[in-house]
Image (cartoon, rainbow, N blue to C red; front, top):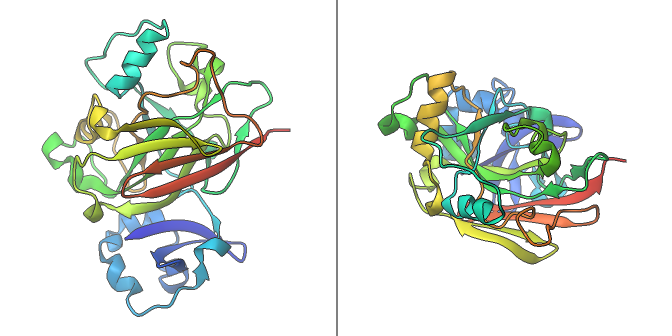
Length: 287
């Protein structure tokens, strides 16, 4: 099942994809104000039953998408979590040792933008970079979640473009300052529920900039797998329904190229992940 958040006549709502349309479950099931509430109640596990016999309320082509989870409590991002990306970092002259534990940082929710909505290049930088990432949406709260129970806490998966303002990212050893500029992290178009993607299934990821493939790899290159990321993050803080884990990007980012290449206003960036779909964002200037 594909679940998403969107605007209907100026009202935030959520629903399920049926064919080329969307069923407005937020209107039909008003006891759940948001998709995160629906997930938290475990009701998403019966999503197929909830849309059965319902006609689409709108065409997908006519809606305004919102980030899949518009205001998650936490957006947890893995750093250098693909071996091919780690190797390109070394080749670019940046010395980084492999960590014994998953390096992570937090994004803020205002840094997100939805499918078909613009990623905004801030005025202070010309180094807006792309990063295709598999996003994991948490479905059940938990603390100190064992690795062998981790997938019991996964509601589904989505596409993430962890847009990065590179020189701000490199102001310090931590990454957060370059990763939380407003409207730089594409998230969408929807969440594919976990029953459709087997645990640890190897998924192809691609980025296309103006139709040109510029990043292509697969999740088999992850250094720390999804279960390990969930175990580690939940040791630090309680994971909550609707929390998002962006699992890192593979090789092919712009700053490691010679010369570096970055996104600029007028570009269109697409992240495609096998089994999920295509996240599309035009690039615009802050001012």
